[in-house]
Image 1 (cartoon, rainbow, N blue to C red):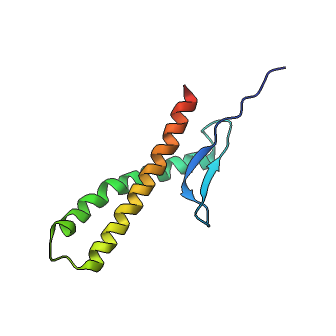
Image 2: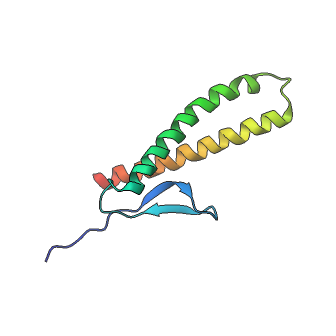
Length: 98
């Protein structure tokens, strides 16, 4: 009898409604939910590449209003969180492939 190896759970790029990590367990990466997660990771990383360039002028201007600086800081933190989640997910999947 052949032994079945369970794949490692994939960390999805969105949290649960209560803020906890969401995972997907699938036999292969071609599921609809897996493709949706891939597409969302791509969008999140592209947004993360754009936001720092948009925030830089605001951060460089000493006269920037505190509320705008706070908004920029929150968006930068969101982008970093998204990028780290995508990197963790991809790192685990790369390790599982080896």
